Image 1 (tube, rainbow, N blue to C red):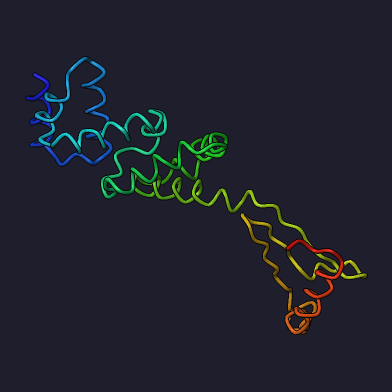
Image 2 (cartoon, one colour):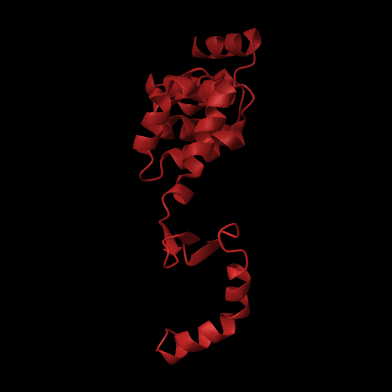
Length: 183
């Protein structure tokens, strides 16, 4: 019966990757073995493993909120499943799913929006500082990242300051080293 249902689903319309993944998970949860799943979906053992991996790693509530996303294939869903399970994403995902703007999107756009929001969150979590001149003008924005620091000079406030810093990097570095800077 499960095989017949799978073939009927495939004949009736092209199921998206996530729809096939959820179908495979539902069959396995009902106690069907992998051979039945492979026959029902007309796929090999490797594909069943990928379908089940994705279905089990993305919470059902998120899959339901996104919908079938028919244009998204296996690579996109696999990448998304890895992002969803990263630490510290839960609250951000909950906020996005609850938003009216998210719910108004089509299924493929929902996946794209959620994917973009949680893949950029590492960037959003980096601390940002500013360096201000004696007048309090924030001339330099400082972003601390993974093993690097970026400086952004506001050339509207101080047009030549960035160039001055670049010209004096050797002197700044020598000063840093002479004061016991790390090797």
